[in-house]
Length: 404
Image (cartoon, rainbow, N blue to C red; front, side):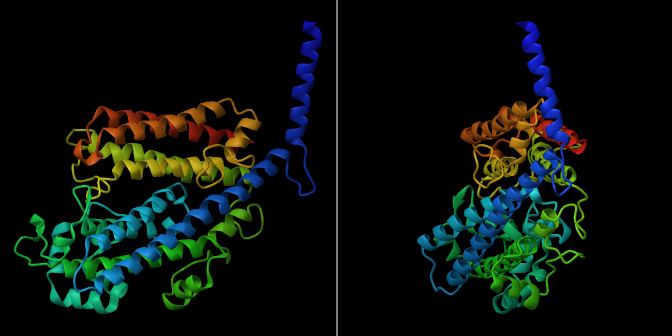
């Protein structure tokens, strides 16, 4: 009986081996075809979807702030609505960080819209300058350079509409800024809303650029604004968008030679990159207390106190990339995770478990309180450990795929 079982086991391995090496009419092996299908699922299902939602949310945020700027008196309901939209846009952005390897990096969009810590002293000086406020009021995004790069993007807006983990009080925005950095500056809430509106327009423009630079089917109105009016770059030297470049792997003009290389790029330059940043920079820099590494100010989203939510959304960005669809909680049949499991990569299950453990660690930390209130907690340490385990497995998976 053992002899018969051994025969069938060897035969099954042989069939699998032949299947893996067989080529189709395109000249691709079975594994290459599966990776091609995974990338073709991932690009529209994850990247186009998330960047589209990000563009929609930042457009809404700008529209709401512009309306708020036009009001003689601000109501709490107005502020709450803006805060809700901001957090939605923020989540879409954080869920995009597993594919920063494209336009976000090439065009400097990531540092432009998501740098921290905020330079409050410089911001206070800028907003107390009547000429700067007048320019921001009249020119909007066209005048944001006057306040400096360290005051722009999500965190410049966050400071205006959140304080101490809560939506900013309407009474404060109807009065005068009382943060200690603004002492003696006499900056009104009205001035702050003028600033936030201009920054939101700038943020919207760059998020439109992200969508257009990846998705060739982005709305025409957004293409016109970005390409014709703002003269922003949206295509590579080949003429491809970043999405087309990835989908045309192996073809003339694409920067990717083959499908294993494309998949490895997604795992390393995309997923591993943000994994390492979350564990060792976003959490680690403020967590480890020694003279070389500790920086108490280097904490993301301190005014809304949504740091752990940011970190979780970054890991979900990895999850969606592996599973092939935004919002996915299990692997799409045509996804990188499914490919790893179906082709018997030895650590496929371990990778999925590590992903779940990383998300769980962030949920547990979030339940204990805000990261900014206790960056040296045991829960923060556990997040670092769990996320680094995930990072190691992502790199192992990429190494295995690249050798196919």
